[in-house]
Image (tube, rainbow, N blue to C red; front, side, top):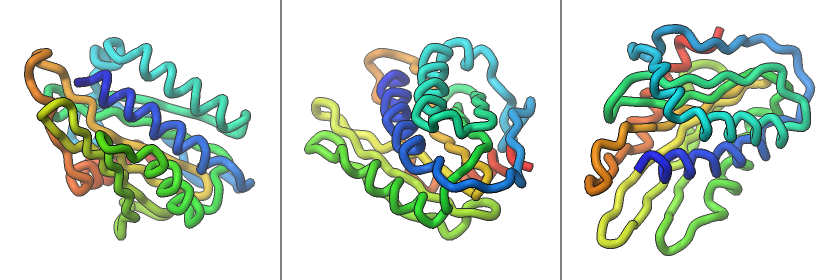
Length: 195
């Protein structure tokens, strides 16, 4: 259910845009999209496949930030069910502590009977700043699954990582991902994309 996962990701990108860009600060980090991140190869074919959704997310983030972004980068790493979308960049990011509060409020505001979101701050963001994960539990018909998006923010950088698994069949259930699994992958990818 790549469209559902990416669509949910788009909603969280809006969450990120709402809470990330407020405070002036000098950029002390850079973001790149190397050929390998988190031990996974960059998947340019998947980037092409998801190109429309990725472009929409970048545009939404740029517009919502009101020109305060210096740079936004995206990449897909891995393949199959171990495929991950990274969205990150640099700019004038708000106080990282306020990031957690804003992320929690925005991510949980769309809780319904079919979708339930919980947000938890990470004790280890994989570097300086703060980290947070939103775990999304969805019910589709008689099936349910869990996915998550994890993000970090410093005063000069931000990044988000979430699963973007290949869809093998319209009849197969989407794989589930816990916040702990996505947080671990976020830390691994962050180590390679942020200087």
